[in-house]
Length: 234
Ligand SMILES: [Zn+2]
Image (tube, rainbow, N blue to C red):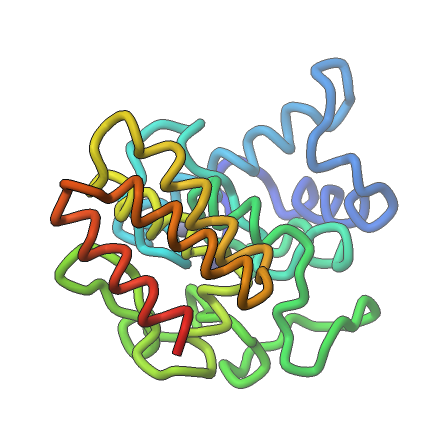
């Protein structure tokens, strides 16, 4: 994104300076003097990247409904650690709330946290995750026949994007609907627990037994559990 339409160069400069001085400027209350400028900025950035990303989340590629609340203006380098880029037009994409929340303030740079960074890194190799502007999503990630997002290679950017952005949680909603309606919420929680809590071998086996029970009499769900078992218990 090269420039803004609703803010002058001076206003944009003012926002950058204000962001650098005060982290809370990103979410100002209505009575805050910068409220209007920040609101216009967010709206413009969200609209630009929504269409630029073809209405999809920049990390998990889920379709985003055309409604301001259904997706977030995503700071690629998080706005708390890197206040200097809080209003940098090239530090944005749009992301679904799942990816945006999971990613939060996690480090996404191959060099590690570097709060004092003077300029936005522009080499794809500088980023651990698939970068919305510097990388081609399909070079690292894919959607399989079940609609699940998978890394093309077992490690590297695709895998790191899945881990850092919590994309398995997106996948699990798709797997959970393969269970009977009464078991979907429980199955979803068990699957999330298996991946996020990294339980012991014994606990993992117990959780899979519970999943097996929820999948009983539902062949689609049994296949989903088999796939997950292959993935998590090599
Ligand atoms: Zn997403």
